Image (cartoon, rainbow, N blue to C red; front, side, top):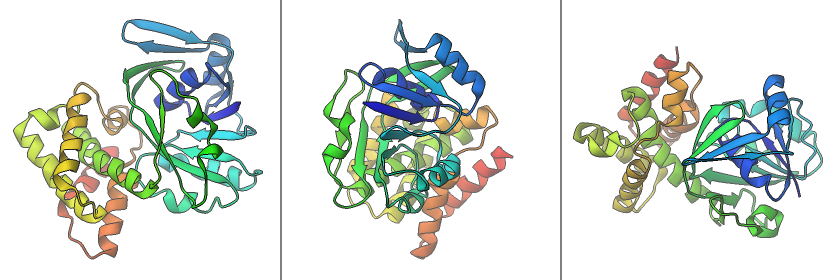
Length: 292
């Protein structure tokens, strides 16, 4: 089937490289130069010591978005123009893969479309405009945002691929809350401390800092399985020990971060529920200050 992937960062390149094996993929980029490079040379996918090249996929820098299935991989703060375009578009199936949860109310305005949200458990590193390294194998979990949507509305769930599977989850809020908890504990601290993920598990002092963030975020999200959730966060830190979080990479490269979609969302929820979250406030102010 025809699939449009909006966003050409690490997740967009990784998704295009895998899905192009069985589908007709168009990758929408922000820059003409990147689109021309991919059209000429394809996407190089690096797994361990092996490199494969995906050819015959199309890249466009103009937002046509004509495909019946769209996968949106841009960051939360880059969604506005895409959502405005979709509101003028005929009904489509759209899967959004963003960190945080502050964008959910915006997605709920797309009532004419079949909207799914998802979380990405893969590790991916963009090496160049047309090269991506698959640094950790996982899956993409997806869930319908609106009641009544069925599995058949997302055809890619029926075609599982080696090293790039999809998993259907019925409860989008729990799925997104669990991922938000992980992002809140790992991303801001690794960015602030300038350390890879594994340091939050192996360094006792950093571990205590992560635990403080964890307790405040758990309280805001009203998650119940405390010890189980903490072990899940630490397992991710250990399994991705050498990875540098997306927020750390954004700080290192002078880009805007997703702090509003992650910690900002939690702070706003805490304010609504009259909860005190001083550690989250500290993290938010620190990362915003580092953004300049």
